[in-house]
Length: 406
Image 1 (cartoon, rainbow, N blue to C red):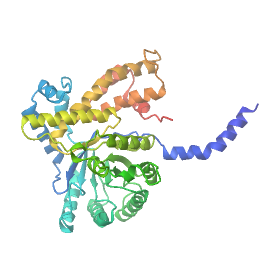
Image 2 (cartoon, helix red, strand yellow):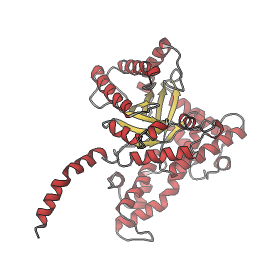
Image 3 (cartoon, helix red, strand yellow):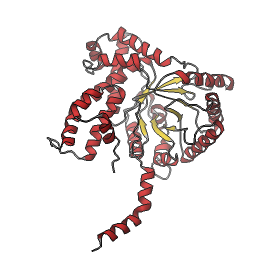
Image 4 (cartoon, rainbow, N blue to C red):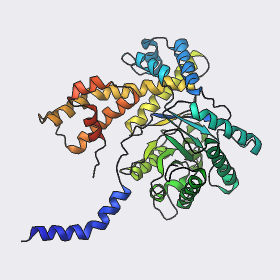
C-alpha cells in the first residue's frame, strides 16, 4: 500500500478546508488582555483620569477597609494575601483599559458640544497612559449613524495619523451582519483618509440586542458577525442592561447572572472560541457608594460577580466607578492566586514527564499555562515565583499558553 500517495491525496482534498480553518480560527493573538474596561462619559475624561481613579479607589479603601481583615469581611473574599498587592496596583496601574463613551453614557448634547468633547478626548488619550484605550461611538442605527461617523472621523483627524497602543473602537447595539461589514468598509476608508496603516483600526462588537445572538433564520448571528469583520474584530462585549431589557427582564432583575445573560454569553463564548477574539462581560450598575454599609454591600456584590465571570471564562468586565476598582483587583488577584499552586504543580509534572494524580494532556497544559500567564499579565502573580514553581521560563509559558488547540 502506497501510504505516501494516500497522504498526498488527502492533503490535496483537504487543503481548501485546512486553509479556511486557519483563516477563520487563527487562535489566540498572544497578547495581553485587560481585566476590565473602564467606561467614562466623554466630557469628563482628562489626561490624568487613571491616576485620579487610582487615588479615589485608594481613598475608598482607607475609609472603608483600611486593612485586609476589614476588606475580607466586607466582601466575602479572603484579602489576606492580596491586600497589599491590590493597593500597589491602584497606585501604579489602576485602569488597564479606558473607553471614552460617546453613546448611552454620554447622550446627545448636540453637535457643537460633542465636537468639542471629541477633540478633548483626543487630547486626553494622547497622554492618559493606560495600556489600552479607545472610544465607544454611536452605532449604525439610522437615527445616530451620522453622529457616530462624524465623531470617529473628527477624532482620527485630531490624532493626526497616530493612535495610542491598544486603541480600539467599540461599536454598540449591532443587530446585523451587514452593519459589521459596513464598519469594515468605514474603517478602511478612514484609514486611507487619515494616513493610518491598513488594518490599524480594530473594533469591539457590543452584543446587547437579541438579534445579535439569534437571527431570524435561527442561527447564531454573533458568529457570522465576527467572521464578517475580516480580522478587525478585537472583542465581543456583553451589554447587560440593553440585552436584558430587550428580552423583557424587569429592571430589578437585570443582572450579569440572569439566565438570559448566561445564555447570550455562552453563545458568544462558542462563537469566539479559536478566533482570537476576546470576550468581556458587562457591568453592574449597583455602585459601592454612600455610607459604609452601602459601600460594603456594593463591594460584596461586585466581587462576587467578578469571580463568577472569571469562573465562566470571561476574563474581562466593565467598571463604571473608581470604587469598583478595589474589588475588581481583589477578586481577580484572589482568583489567579488560588489557581496558581495547583496549576503550577500540574504543569511542572506534565512538562517534566513525572505524572501525577491528574492525567493531563497537551490541551490541559495549554489551559494551565494560560491561567498563569493571565495572572502574570495583570499583576496577580510574579514572574520569579511562577518560574520557580513550574521550572520553566516565562517565554516557555507564553508558548504553551498561546498554543493553538484543535
